[in-house]
Length: 480
Image (tube, rainbow, N blue to C red; front, side, top):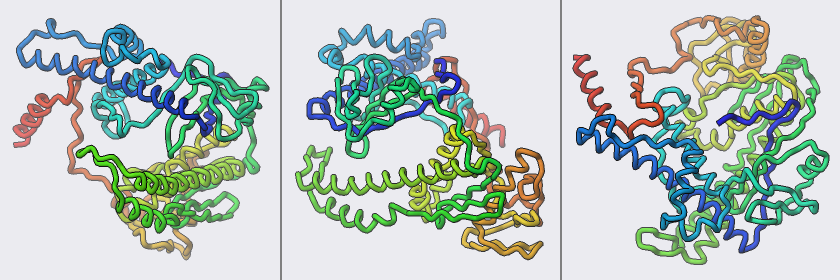
């Protein structure tokens, strides 16, 4: 499917508003989200049933030409097949007309994307961690969400209601004037609307094509390096020599004592048990809701703080240098995982990137292996080792002694000169360490690369256990 491209001078932005639906509207919202989940589960079962049928026929010795034909998981093909069976299938025949067609299209589109991700990962084309075979979604754990792309989607003139297809007009918890002003001026156009249930309440996210004027930063010629950390959320060092420390609010740590107390209260009351069918008591539901409100407040405070920080950085500096951190690997450190997750490193980099495009700035991504902490920001000498507990950088070649994070931020700021002009000492990634033995790269060279198993275009057989076992036996014979 061709990706939507905004017009020149426009960007695609989301406006999210909390909803205040009544009891009937809440039931309709849950029905639409449940319909999306049911359509997704049907598509997954319909495609995988064909895969397992072909695999069974192959085990019986059926010729390739006589096997069950592949079923396409493209969105048009899934829509056509679903529209044919929804009138007769007992799972949908009695209630499918109660919801908008967009709810079923949401589930089918998610299934098509899941199978695309699985096959591209299987073929080695998709970046990142391997993606497993799509599985059915549970009613108890699936996220409630539904997307509307056609129909009536508008913000009412009173700026306290939104209108969605089949759901009607729903009151919003907050004022919609920020979007309403742009819609009235003709500088915005609603593309789609997504309703979701998160943090104990319903939200609507309106995807809007917005005309955004190109803004100029307050200091367009200043380069700033952003070093992220746990003790200080960010250390900023600009090209003028100014160093700024942004404190880490640690919202989760501040709420841990209260969360422990509320968690003990929840554990002492009668909760749900799916194995025995026991329903939770009213006191358990009340205690669990109180605990969840604390988690929701922590998440809201974190989101608000990160947006304010990234907006301030982008409004002030023209060029921002940020590290490409391996956040998923850092979370494996059990001693720092909670603090790293609470800081939100990934969100900071994402927001700095897209806000830089809006502000007319430049974003430079430092290489993941760039030794910003081990490099001297004065002479460019690189240390072979610098343990994490050493918080003060002491250069072995020159008399520089300064804070470790401030030194890293200065190196990141100098890296922009090397990337943009090809000069600079600290930013020169070809600089050699005093003891160059590759200490900055912690990689394992003894592990064999994961072998990609090829499959037919348009669908690989599930798991391919037999082929994997034969391949491992062949490798074992070769190694002997």
